[in-house]
Image (cartoon, rainbow, N blue to C red; front, side, top):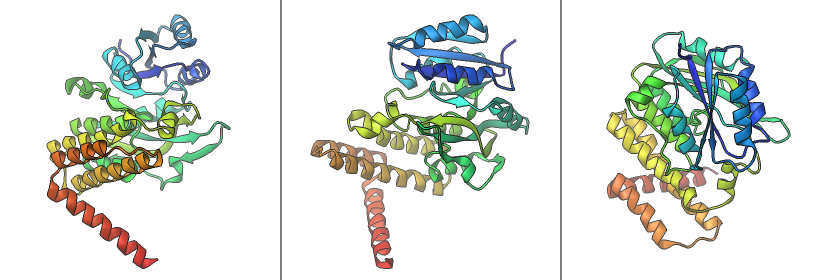
Length: 318
């Protein structure tokens, strides 16, 4: 009999944290799950740890592949799941003991295609530095358009793929996967694409069920502390999200959010280039051309003027 939940954990050189992650899954109050540990070409003892857990518990499967990045590892896991629902977890994070039981209880509300739950962000001193529990409490069914609005309203909380349940049939039927050419905001892009494939309601809660650990040497931290091609893929993600939403035929306010997101990402990319003293006119032109092709000259300049007016109004009110 197939498990209800398939948990996919991409693993890369995480031998210091992996056991904490897997043990948190083994200690869940809800036990009908399978765990897919996808070793993405680790050079430390991560692969051995994966194999050891797989030997101890038949619900745990260890896979080993050539290094391709977190999106590649998640896609590999998706191809091998057997559960009705999919959950993603990072190898250096952990699930709260009631996580799976709580998420499953939301599904029982009926006609749910997606569950979005909250998390605690924890620093290297194990101190909670951010939590969705600090947001106004909410736990309810919402429609697809409302869920998409959340992604643009809270650019961090609903955007990560962990602390969520995805229906495997939706992912398989629509052949959804993580874009392996995107290294920043790939989670947001995947969530937008998934939501556009949903047909039923979404369950949304600010309650924390997941512990997200921030490390100084994590891949995300490295991305923020450097600037290279990978850094600008977040901008490309905003373009792809816009195209997905436009094809879906979403409401005008969501399209406006998506356009605004593109412009903000473009400006942020230019600011980062300036911060790292990168004077690349060709890259600037290339990014601007991407906007023109995706949107239009008219819409681009309209958004530019709108932003200038907003900044001017803000200065006048100071």
